[in-house]
Image 1 (cartoon, helix red, strand yellow):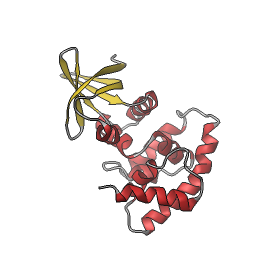
Image 2 (cartoon, one colour):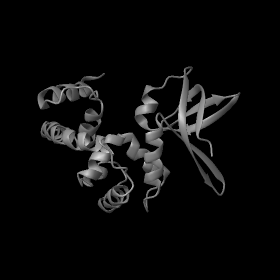
Image 3 (cartoon, helix red, strand yellow):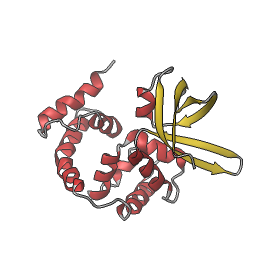
Length: 193
């Protein structure tokens, strides 16, 4: 299996990039937030997951090993293929996925295009036993109360759940825990050109 790849970005498409490695252009499907950060001509190092099918080899790339591990776990859910797993990681960060699973909020997965209520439940149940328990989970759960209030405030302002989740994801990890400050930071997401 190809575990990682490093090369120059030759082009960026709607759902993938072409990474030039040793004179060969490899198409790599990446989550939307990562794709939006990359620029043609710059170099990129990605952690990858290779999907082998009867007549197709497809490479998926991620910024961190953690994202790649979540991708692999999502593929284990009945009814979740690589494209849907990538869509989930394009919409939700690993921490948002953890919060959804540990706080039993399967409906968060329904905010991803292509994930229905039953699939959302399957994802939550599948990940529940597979996510490692750690000290950081307590911090994730505590953060959820504040972020839930921010999420509720954003949706009350008329933003969709997907837009609100995306805005929450841009809040820096070192941001204060206060609802007002986190809401102000989240609203900056919508003021981007």
